[in-house]
Length: 65
Image 1 (tube, rainbow, N blue to C red):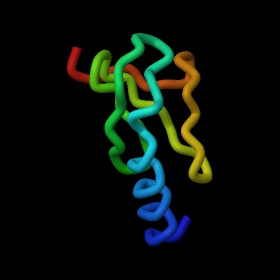
Image 2: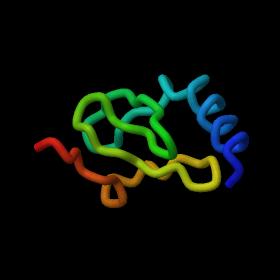
Image 3: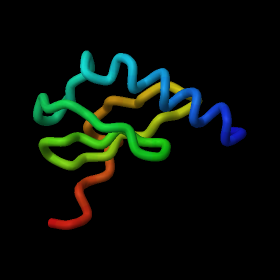
């Protein structure tokens, strides 16, 4: 995916990310690179083709535990 498209996708997600909640803990997200990172539990959900994949089993666990 070209860098401009990836940045456009993140900008679009930023406009409505507050309406999304982590399926594991219910907290809000912050957008980082090609992921939405939960501000509560730290799980990182991938963004595939501009669409966040909010499936707890597919999220990467927090690495600083």
